[in-house]
Image (tube, rainbow, N blue to C red; front, top):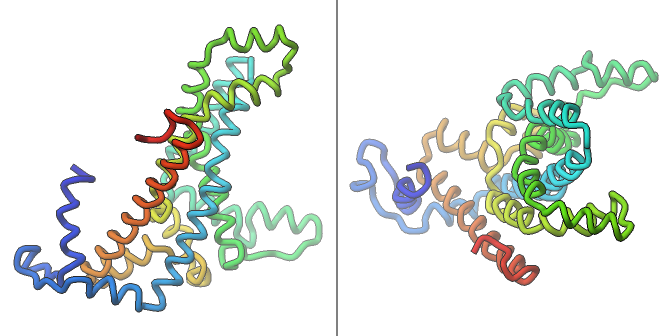
Length: 275
C-alpha cells in the first residue's frame, strides 16, 4: 500500500508534471529534472549535509542500542532491569515536536545546560543558533529518543542464546566480560548485521520531523537536508517533478548501499545478510 503501489508515481520525475493534467497527460521530458538537479549548486550543499548526518547516525547512533542491550542483559535484578528499560523506552513514544521543544528548553540561554555553565563562570552559549553544534545535537537527540527502543530486537536475540554456553564458559573460568565478548556479541552479530543493512538503506533518508523541528535560520547551512529541501521545494513551491527526481536519486543510492554491504556481510558470514 505505502511502498510498492506508489512506485508508479516515479514517472513524474521524467515529466513536467501538471497537477490538473495528471500523470497520463503531463508532457514527458526525459532526464531534464535530473540534469537540473545536478546542475543546481544548492543541491550539493543539501546532499553534503544529508551524507554527513547520515554517516554520524551510522557511526555514533547505531552502535548505542547494541551496547545498551549488552548492558541490560548483564543486570540480574529483574525489577531494576525492567524499570531501567522502561525509562529508556519512553522517549520513543514522544513526537519529535516534544523532543525538539525539550531540547530548545534545555539548551536555551536560560536553560539547564547554560545555568550549570554559569555556576562555573562560563559564558552562555546559544547552542540552537550555533551551526557548529547542530549535527552534535541531532546525534544526541536521536540517541535520546530511539536508542532504548532499538534494544528490543537485540534483547530478543540475546534471550535465544543457549544458557548452557554461559555455564560452560563459567566452568572454564571466563568472567562476565569474557562471556560477553566471546559468546553474547558473536552470537547476536547476525542480527546486528541485518539491522545495519536496514539502516544503511535509509542512509540518505533522515527523519524529516527531527531535522525540521531542530532547524533554525542560523543553522540552515549545516542542517538543511534532502528531506527539508523536498518539503520546501516540492510541497511549498509545488515543484513535484524535481522533488520526485530527488526521491528516485535517494532510492537508487539506498539500493546500491544495501547491495554492496549485503555482499560484504555474506563474505563475513555465509548465512549473513538479507538475502
